[in-house]
Amino acid sequence: MKLQGKAHVYGDHVDTDVIIPARYLNTSDPKELASHCMEDIDAGFVGRVQAGDIIAAGDNFGCGSSREHAPLAIKHAGVSCVVARSFARIFYRNAINIGLPIVVSDIPVAAGDELVVDLGAGIVENLTRQEKRSFAPFPDFLQGIVAAGGLMQAMKALEGGKA
Amino acid sequence: MGMTMTQKILAAHCGKQALQAGEMILADLDMVLANDITAPVAINEFEKAGCGRVFDGQKVALVLDHFTPNKDIKAAEQSRQVRRFAKEQGVAHFYDVGRVGIEHVLLPEQGLVTAGDLIIGADSHTCTYGALGAFSTGVGSTDMAAGMAYGKAWFRVPEAISVRLTGALQPWVSGKDVILHLIGLIGVDGALYQSLEFSGPGVASLSVDDRLCICNMAIEAGAKNGIFPVDEQTLAFLKDHGAQEPRVYAADADAQYARVIDINLSEVPLTVAFPHLPENARGFSDIPADLRIDQVVIGSCTNGRLCDLQQAAQVLRGRRVAEDTRVVIIPATQLIYEQAMNEGLFKVFLDAGCAISTPTCGPCLGGHMGILAEGERCVATTNRNFVGRMGHPKSEVYLASPAVAAASAVLGRLASPEELEGAKA
Image 1 (cartoon, rainbow over the protein chains, first blue to last red):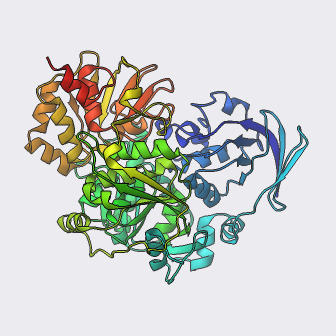
Image 2: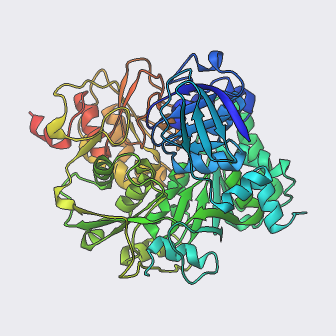
């Protein structure tokens, strides 16, 4: 699968409190969550983001709270993929479990650069800067989750349907 | 090759004799936990997938602690959804207002976790129970949904950092200072994907409460879990709280560690984490002289235990909170609330001019019961000081122990209890 979009760039340690502030966690509606995505770090994000856009960040993206509302807000804001130097572990598993593509890469990106992520080939490309990097694929077990369409579907296949 | 304590617990829960770091496993769960914020998303997923019944109602805990007593209509709807699900599914450990406490203080108190358990919780501070020799870690809501349905979760077997403790803490210094000090040393991603395994002769000098506080904030170093060896104190705690029979695991002598960190507890200073990351740890030799504060919060899953309230009361006894500072004290559970009241701590707090709240996570995550305005500063015994964590994005949170928070409350500025004693006329 190829994903292409403009980059929205953030630094290190982007925490889930700024991705979706707790004051909005009184709902589990993904659309409502998406309308406040990145509000405390980038108030203009929701107005600017286009379907397919890509978030690019530094180390430890998604640190802090386990709130799955964070990857949900990002996904439902229209973001197709998050590319970061590293991810906090709960955000990493949440993204896989809900089917938000994430890529570990240190490819240089500036705001507004056009990125293409080829998940199958394991290549991320910055079209604006003409740079290309390969990235390691997920372990087989996690690829199975992604291929199944998320954790619940994968567990159904592994453990058999529940009545 | 030898295994770490964490690897042994994981191996025992996926039917293997041995595991190596990096392996992917599907492991059996002893307890799955969620709260009023994360459970609704999990319930949505559970029901959408047509999961039917939870795998074992005795191994599910649903704790309405974050936005309760319901802070607004939407929060009330979320609580109602969880309440309905708990009733329909026969969830044995459902806690509602009047019985509820902050989840990570409540579960050990109620004997719902024991040594050797494998626990997941849809709350990042689920890592707290490592203090009791369990493997416990925070996950998201879909993991929680799958855990409730199948009693299993996937894990990448972590490597570990060995944190060797020697010595004993100085007066006023607590587990909170140890973990802030450690996060200051290694950074907020210093233990990313790894276990923090504590060991050494210093362990015995730490109370179970100190260990719970230390493991609670393992996540703030990015760790998958924090874990302490099981000793007589652990076993006594588990027995006192009616926990199930402990299964004691110990790291092999030849276990491999990614890194070894030595901490002499007697050298750990009173420590404060400055905005906006828990790694911004500073001792009092390195703080501005007159950092005025607007609010103090003493509570949370990190420091809302009885010992924390006792420590705060020791500082506040016979003193008054500074005129321009407000203090919110939040006993973490109903039992702690009752004990604090019976011990006369409430009288101390009321005489000092503090507000006492019913148990709730409330202000720690900027929910309610003490939200900060633009530009306001708070000294809090909580666990995170991210941008906007307790309210306005331009407010500031300073993380500290109950003793430091209480001393700061009296002087109206960031201050240590020693300084307060010195300031006594």
